Every structure is written in structure tokens, then in C-alpha cells.
Amino acid sequence: MTTDERYDVVVVGGGAAGLSGALALSRARRSVLVVDAGSPRNAPAEHMHNVLGREGTPPVELLAIGRREVEGYGGTVAEGRVSALSRVDGGFRVDLADGRSVRARRLLVATGLTDELPDVPGVAELWGRSALHCPYCHGWEVRDAAIGVLGSGPQSTVQALLWRQWSDDVVLFPHTGAAPTPEQRELLAARGVRVVEGEVAALDVTDGALAGVRRATGAVVARAALVVAPRLTANAGLLAGLGIEPVDQLVHGAVRGTRVPADPTGLTEAPGVWVAGNAADVTAQVMASAAQGMAAATAINVDLVLEDARTAVEQLRDETREAS
Image 1 (spheres, rainbow, N blue to C red):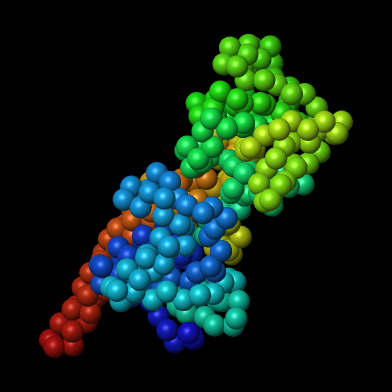
Image 2 (cartoon, helix red, strand yellow):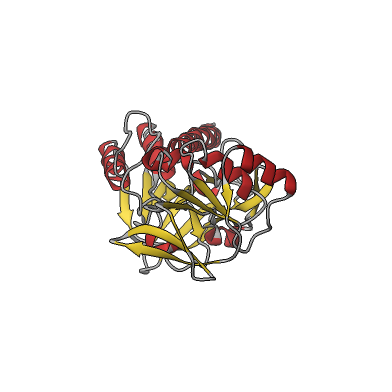
């Protein structure tokens, strides 16, 4: 790819949101390039859940299917990492880390987010398997198991009560977060959720799975799964050059991370730039991200249709003037 290559739309990110948007745009007969770094957020997970029609499908399999579908309608999917976005000649220049660059009339940014995990030894090793964050993604798989919840903020009590839906053996470890209030302790006790005070030092791992939660005192509480609440940070660094900065996103009244502000179609404050998926909403799961990509794609196509019509009018007027 060189700067001579021009596309109606360049999609940055080849996850569910980016591929969904690229599919709709390709079917709308737009020239589309998807640039994908090949590092999806859900790569550590063996299977996806609550994906209608694809329940239990491995994440990499869904992405492979999506790539083939985009390419089947004439779209292009290229492996690479975008290093910079800039506005040029009424459109955009997209620079890749390997020195390649292309031009685009519109941008769809679907770069996802980064899970900033708590600094507890063992959490990163078990992430997506025994160290979990979403009950709707993993709750069924650990139903009736011994579950721990690592405290991280004001929503820890809600987390513990939520996971109690899947198991009657739930322990809340306040860790370095605030201790539950008397009212919260009453709620937890009423649902049979135990509270184990003190800081968590590490996770005990056996054969690649969680065996227990080791406290700073050295005591170990046997657990089969540990729930953590990472900070969810939008991968929005590329947008700074276009004047777009992320903002805090609240979930149940507490800041859970950052997102790129946009309207319901994904249009940002920068004309010609749309965002979809976890970059726009940290709570979006696979199907919601795909829906956002579709919504952004339809809005982008309408925007291009109107621009094409205005350009055609100008050309027609020029031809009429030359003929007269």
C-alpha cells in the first residue's frame, strides 16, 4: 500500500465492530480497507457467549469468518498497525507502522480498549480463564463453583451480589479497596456472600488454573475463579492528532474507564471520523460492538452519498457553463 491508494473508508481495527462496519460498507459498493493489528481483546478467551447463532464460537474463528465475508464483497483486509491519522486534502492520511500509507475519505475507528488488570501476581496469567470480569460472558461456565471477587472500588458489592446469581459460594475480598459499609455488609450477608478482610498477595495456580487466593498473611482461601474489575481504557491515542480526546465512562454510577465521545451513529466531534465498539462504549460485548459498527457504516455511507451528489451537481454546473 502507498499514498497512491485511495479508499472511500479505512477501518482501523478488525474486531467485531470494524468487520461489521466494513461488511456493510463493502455491500454498499464502497471501497474499504480494514487495517488490523491482530490483537483482539478477547483473544485469551476460548469461546464467546451470548452471540446469537455463534454461541460458543472461538473468537479467532468469528474474526476469520468476518474477514472472508468482507473480502467476498470486495473489501480489503490488511494486517498492520496504524501509527498515525492526519487530515489532508479534504480527507485523511493513514500511516502504518511499517512505512506504508493510504488515503481515505472517511474513517471508522474500532480500536477497542485495553484491560488494565490489578497488580496481583497470577491475574494476568489466568486472565480470560480463571480470572474473569463479565458474568454474562463466563458465569455459566463457573456456575456452582467457588468464586472470589477481588475488591477494587465502590462497585465491588454489586459485583459480588451479581456473581451470586451463578453460585452460592461467593467470597468478597475487599483487598485494597474500601471496606463494605454496614448497609452493604447486610446485603452481602443476606445473600450468603462472605467477606474476607485483608490484602490479597497473589493467586495460587495449579496446572494453569486457579487453586486459591493467597492473602498477605499467607493464608489461602480455596477458589476456582476470581472476578476482577480492570480499568477499561479506550485505545484512543491515534485520535489525538485529529483533536479527539477520550472522556470518563460511568457504569452504575462509578468510573470504569474511558471512551471516545460520539453521537448515536458513532460520529465524533471531528467531521468524517466515526468510532464503534469498545473504543466508544466499554460495556459493549461482541454483538453490541457489531451493531455499532453497522450503525456507523450506514451513517458513513449516507454522508458519502450526499457528498457524491454535491460533487455531481458542481460537475454538472461546470459542464453546463462550458457548453453555453
